[in-house]
Image (cartoon, rainbow, N blue to C red):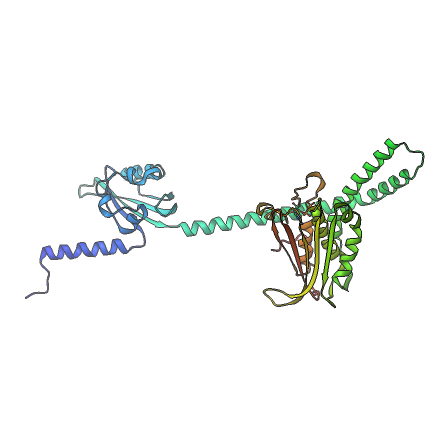
Length: 381
Ligand SMILES: Nc1ncnc2c1ncn2[C@@H]1O[C@H](COP(=O)(O)OP(=O)(O)O)[C@@H](O)[C@H]1O
Ligand SMILES: [Mg+2]
């Protein structure tokens, strides 16, 4: 009786041992003969192509790899010339495309002739995805820096043009007072005045936000909204918009009043513009805690029964210069509004359904934080 296995038994034992190692390796392993036909492929390799082990015997590599063959052909040929290959490539697989790090090693017979190739590959798809994500956020960073530069430029331009703008507005006003004007000239002056109003709107949009706001006030949201409604009273009437107000009592907050008024002004203005053929405007305020931090605050909602927005539009509304109103829009209203909200450590969100309407909700903390001076171009999400 002996412990040593019989030769054929040992061979079988070695075969099983070899298969076990090959099949449990977290890598693609295969052997290819000098005519580029498979000899064996391990289990992971089989799984990559969704083929059973037998399907590889004597099969041309080109046939199994299909369209991915061209990615590796010259590596295979170089390895067969005796040059070991190491490279990264993309391979189609039954579970979608994978990125692989691949090694091709020539296998020599005892006479020193190449008789085949050992193929080894590891899956680096996750690493590549991570690198891609990194690249994306790097791009986003460059984008936000560009935006900051554009913002600074816009602010300095609007600062420069603001004074002459005011002067021209006043001059136009004086000119329109002239009783001797022909109807035609009066029409030109009216047009000039309207166009000028647009220019000053763009200028003040960027300028007002850039200016340091010093006056933090404790105020009720309905006071701010009442001022905004007064501004729009003519348009509300013209468009046939009914206003529904609902304010929780003794709800006040401390904020940079002119900035929050600007936000409400933008939201109400947009709501009215979405209801050119009439509708209902809903203004509400109520106490509400921040949904993650639990910080006490106020939620102000501006709702309309207007045109609503497609999901595609909703994706872009907070971007600078995004507008669906052509030359009648600046695309700055919501961009600035969100920044003002963030500056107050608040949130500005939207819910909208096409042809049904839109609700913007502005959440603001009851009290200002000491460090509310976030640079206006800061990218906060
Ligand atoms: N209440 C709303 N209903 C429908 N669309 C809206 C509403 N508010 C904003 N939008 C959409 O968001 C876009 C961007 O708004 P905004 O930043 O204020 O720029 P602007 O009003 O100058 O176009 C608008 O052009 C419009 O498409
Ligand atoms: Mg607007």
